[in-house]
Each structure stands twice: as C-alpha cells, then as structure tokens.
Length: 590
Image 1 (cartoon, rainbow, N blue to C red):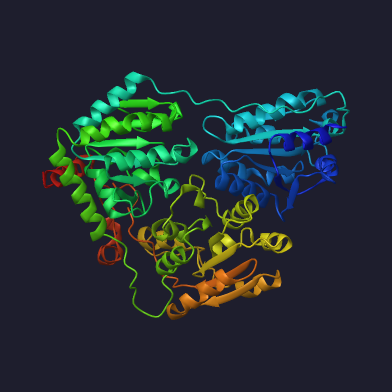
Image 2: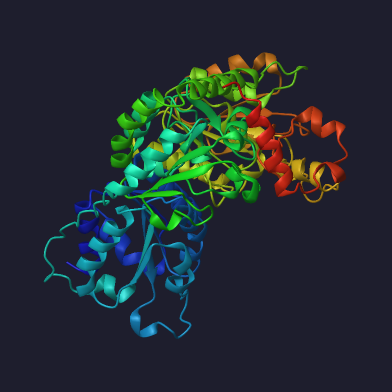
C-alpha cells in the first residue's frame, strides 16, 4: 500500500467513479495504482480535454469532476479548464504529478510550479510533502470543492509521495460539505417590505440558483408571485420556456422583452446573479430606476458591482421559500392594479418581440435549425462552444433545466464543447447529449473525436460552419468599419471527412429544405455522429446591445444596416438613459 494506491481507494470512498486524464512520468505511480481498480479512467487526447471533460461531468450532475495529469506541460495544459471551473463555480478536484520533493526548485525535468501558477484560479491548492498528509488533504479538497460556492481544488502530488509507504494510513473517511447558513430574519422582512412597495418588479435570476440547489424554490416563487423574470446565460432553464413569467435571457444578446423590463423596472429581485457586464450592458445605466433586493449564497457578490438596498445573504432556497407566500399575498394587495398592468405589458412584449424563423433564401438558418433540434430532442443536454453559435443556442434552444445547458460563461473558452459533452455523457450513459460547436471552436479540441470513437460515446455533434471566426467577424463589421482581420477560415478541412477519418459517422447539409431529414438522421445514428452544417458567413446574432450602451439600446439587422457605424455607437450619457427610462415608465398603463 503506497501513497498512490491509497489515493485511488480514497477517490472511490469519495464516490468518484470516473476520472479523466493523460499519463506521464511524474504521475506514473498513480496510473500504476489504477491498474485493476474499480475507477473508470477516460484517456483523453490532450490534457485540456481532460479538464473540460471533468468540467462537463460536474456541470451536468452537480458532482465533483476529477481530472489527472502529469507535471510540467501536463499540468499547464489543464490551466484553461481550471480557470473555466473557477469563474463558473464548477466543483472539481485536479490531481497533478510533481517531481520528487528533493528535486523541487532545481529546474528538474518537467518541473513546474503549478501550485503558484494556479493560485488565482482555484478555491484552494495543496502541495503534499509526505504520505501522512494524504488523508487530510483529500478530505479537505473534496469538502472545499463541494461547499458554499463550488469551485476547483488542486492537489499537486510529488512522485516520492506517491510511492511512499502508506500501510499505516487507515481507510479514507470523506468530510461532509459545509451547510449554507440561513439568512437573517430581519433581511427577509426588509426584502418583503420593499417588494410590497414595487409597481414594476422584475426577478433577475442567475447561475447561483442551480449552484445553491434552489431550482425548486425559485420555480415555486415564480408560480406564487408571477413576477416577470429574466435569466442570465447560465440560468437558462431555471423557469420552463413557456412559463408566463419567463421573459427570456437579458443582456448583450438577450431578448428585447427582458431588457426593456429590466430597464423600466422599479425593483430588481436579484437571485444568484452577479451583475456581469454581458448581462448589464453599461452598468451605470443598468436598471436606472430600480431598487435592489439581492439574494446570494456568496456574500462577496452582494454589493460588489451594484449596491443592494436589501442584502439577503445565505441559503438561497430557504430565503426564496420564506419569501414566496408573503410576496404572493402582497402582489394581490397594494399596487395590485399597477402590477397587473406591468405583467400584461411584459407579456405583450414577449409576444411582440418573439424570434422569427422565416428567413428568406434557401440557405440554412442556424436559429431555425437549433430551435427545431430542441423540439426533436427536448430531453437533450447541450454542451456548447463559444461564439455566435453559443448565443444562438441560448436564444433558440428551449431549455427546461439549467444542468442541461453546459456552456463556458465567464471565461468564454473555445474548445469547451466537445470534451464537456464527453464528460456529461460519461457521467450518465443514458443521457442524450448534443454538442453544438462552430468551425473555429471545433478545431481547438478536435483530437477528442478519438476519445468519442474509443469509448463509443454517443454524443451527437452539430457543427455550424461559416468559414470564419463569426463573433469576431461580426464585431469587426459593426464596430471596426468592416476591417476584417484574421477571421478567415475558408480553408477549413472537410469536417465530415475529418470525422470519418476518426471513425465517426458524419453527414453534411447546406440547404434549409434538407435540415429536417438531416437532424432526424443525426438523432437516429447509433453511437457518435457529426452533422456538418454550412451557414452564411455574413450571418449575425441579433439583437445586440452595442458596447458602452444600456440594454434598452438594442440593435437588430435593419437598424445596424441603416445607421452609420461610427455615429450610431457613440456613448450615451447616463442622464439621457435615465430620462428615456423614465419616459417609458410613465407611458405604462396603470
């Protein structure tokens, strides 16, 4: 029983059944200990793929994802996936090999200070010096990863610790996660009082809903109060798409109904959201008339970017449950007529500004394809890459649960989609998993097609190919006077042929009339399959809030075409935005 074998048994005791990794010299004793163990190891083809796969595993399930790599380049290749987990609060334990302790600091072969390198992007780091530290380190790593606001924890494991005698160590005993404290009573009373005074309240829901295990409480609150609700990218699915209160996503590529509601609201009930710049637009002009009730499990987020009139820190599920009934009663009391008119206006706007799918021409219209795929596979978990296709998925896929939408939110890491999809599928083989990628993102971790093939992971890939770095191209078109710089990907390979070279079934479509049959064939394929979709290079994501503008100043394709780019996006003063919002609010039916 050496340190590596003890660690393998400890992982099993923590409930880990699947790990993702790539072996090398400094981690070789651990891989030797895996031989014959019950743990399933998934051999990826690049360490970044291991980190993203563990990330997708954790996002889809809420369980701790585990990845393993060797020292030096193995560890450094994990960094992007670790950063993504930190910024999106994903529970992970990362195990890296390290040179033996006597060699540390000598510039030994493949020595790298991964402990120091990852300090800003982990919840905690451990660098072991002896076998005796293993029981406490492993228990603390998993406890920290799971507790409070989840996140990644690093265990840097020198080679001599792995081979050291561990016969004297007892069986591993996992530590329980910390219990989230309840909110103070006075804060809930103050929140209820402020809500009772509002005529135009809006709920602004974020990723903290699912992180705080508050989905059921959030939906109950929405059902009871019927307050118009907007959601961030990572909260999509927190309310069913057809829920009468659901106005959709807010922010840069959010719906007009959502953005207008926020800008005209007199109270924002913020639940597990952090006022991210992609959600708020110009922060100084975000919801200029609104007072703020902020519920969050992480007190550091409350007041960080926008001062809260009432701070409700603590267990979000408990807070929502306690607020639901009193707030529902208040909705029927004072200001009831005004609130009814407000709900009606928001509902009307949702219908008026609903997305259209009747694009002219015979080319494939990506939003229509994605909407249709969500209808054909309503149970699917979607792992998405980053770019235009990411926003189209957010806008047009009808998610019914946040854990079915796996996307790199805060970091925006291209190459996330395919390995994350593998991780989600490995966590639950019965789950239907779809990866939506773009031609730019797909090439960043294309090697993981080999992982799909080896394990016959039945992920279905929709690859939207516009022969460009689409989001960068769109911004260069709108904000850089069409000076297109280094966005041309017209020399892409034939992606269907690439997939077939890896042993993956593939088909292609480039006409709208053929989309229905192509999607049906993709879903019917046995095992992994790829659908290569050629789309218009000039296609843009609409609507769009330009940089340094507030969320009421959205553009669609017609407005962007008719305006002079240089003048159209000049900064708008705060007072002008506030005046506009006041005029809009005064025009509301009451």
